Image 1 (spheres, rainbow, N blue to C red):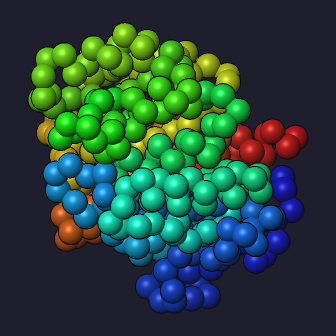
Image 2: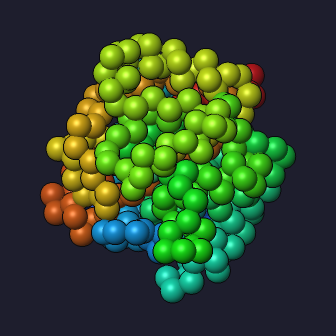
Amino acid sequence: MANIPKSYQPIPGDELPRFAGIATFMRLPHIAATEADEVDIGLIGVPWDGGTTNRAGARHGPRQIRDLSTMARNAHHATGITPFELCNCADLGDTPVNPVDIEDTLKRVEDFYAQVVKQGIVPLTAGGDHLITLPIMRALCRDGPVGMVHFDAHTDTLDRYFGESKYTHGTPFRRAIEEGLLDPERTVQIGIRGALYSSSDKDWGLEQGIRVIEIEEYNELGINAVIAEARRVVGDAKAYVSFDVDALDPVYAPGTGTPEIGGITTYDAQRMLRGLRGLNLIGGDVVEVSPPFDPSGNTALVAVTMMFEILCLLAEIIDQRRA
Ligand code: MN
Ligand code: MN
């Protein structure tokens, strides 16, 4: 077990009550990315929803997720993983964004993550809409394409919107595959459903070799078989986890821009994330929380709980790589 300085521990709830103090991700120290050389896992917000095609609001996600993350605690009740004892974790703040310019934002976010990657920090991100995964991958996957476990109601592999717009939250993984950041044959998409713009929307991803597990097949297979299939597709090489909260049924996560009924339960999502233990993960994100549609705060609580699941996976694999 790593020797973690006390300064990297979350503020204990019995020293400062959970409702008090300045909200950081999981009550961790807030450290500037440029001064985070000792950090193993950086929790990062990307307050951006300029890729959203319908109901916006995910730009407010990081702030509300930080607030609800004060509910997080230290030890995973089912796996026993204690991420803050395995790794130095910190809140690296929000990336720069330009709320009125998509391409400038893509550059700003990529530059921020390039600095994070340069320092050997594994990023765990709170969005933001799903377009943010593209600039993260541009920084993270410069050595060649990675695999991905992608939870979503949507494939996000469409080509263009409104004629020539290449960059929206419906297109990041098309661009990531075109740019050689993502290996389609090592990509699995879980929970896909909802009406399409056209019956041909599915074709491109399938032609590239993406393993698409639509919700009907997911229910037919059952959780354990879906986990086994995800592990088979991704294999042992580097992989990323991307969790769009609209993969979940809107009864659990209504606060999102593009809800689709008939989705995954929160408990099954937790079980699937636990099923990814030991995969060679290099980062992860939880995206599409839209606080204006989340008056109870429950969607943000769901998001931070999924972030904690992913944090446990990252901390365990980083600790194993060191051993
Ligand atoms: Mn998505
Ligand atoms: Mn989606």
